[in-house]
Length: 373
Image 1 (spheres, rainbow, N blue to C red):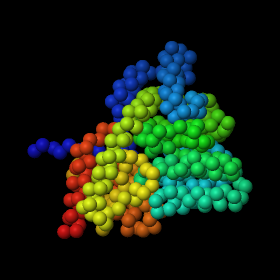
Image 2: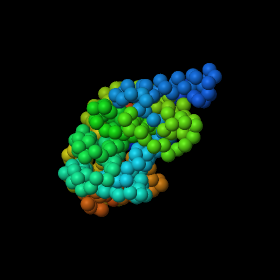
Image 3: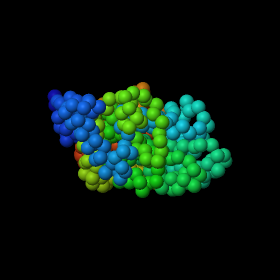
Image 4: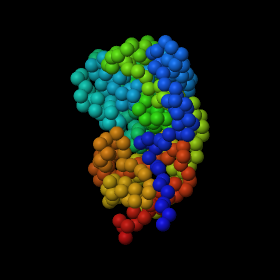
């Protein structure tokens, strides 16, 4: 019996590592060197790290010294909020779990802005909150939602933040390589990015920080990253991250193709099951992702059935304990637990093929028909 080939459609959880990234990482790992050492190996490691920093800076339009390497997106988010020394945090009710966790333990004031049924932040509510008091505030918002792909109007949010004297941090982890990013043009103070969402290695990310903003370090060590983040840098990971970022233009071209496939998936599903819906599809969103509500079939059941068909998808964020749970993002948008508990996320990426999209639709229809037979 020939084993059916596995189809990976969970790129928003993590993208398979690009072959070009593996190649350069193996080269680095075969030549060890601490970038803080003054000998030739150390200098070479330092040079490779700084080259990766420059590649990242060039591709998102910022200065190289604004790029602070971290262990990933979660650390970058923590560094931005906790290192800001603000006593007030403003965020939304549809954020990534890393921001939600920070908010739950934040020692100052926490204000939550609701999103509407399309997943967009209420900008009037944001203005109102900022005008209520003069506490030193930081706004932390997802640029692109990890579950729905909904894109917030960051320039509009930045304008509101500036007028109120508040800091603005955006989590651009899902947006990087899927939409063009110009850090300076966005007008934000800080931005989190991550390697493994774009075909780089896991365990490395970065916080982009405006030079005028002296972020406080909360990991102390040997003064690495200009004193902003202690600890020996992950050179192989950083070089791999830089290589993945260098391929962003290629990724953006692929997004145009993925959008066609994604739209076709939704059209075929809607034609087969008019009761199905796609939370966030009325808003600007990432081209590679579809959040799909299947009436009457729980998310965990769908995930398991897709897995039996050798198709990897998810029910939402992958940063939890591995358990399938109700989507707080969909609940925030729709206010309906039935929808939130019966929604899955399908996300395409650099190695996706049209045949994968067809297989997904076939499996989805099979599950729906089984429920409604």
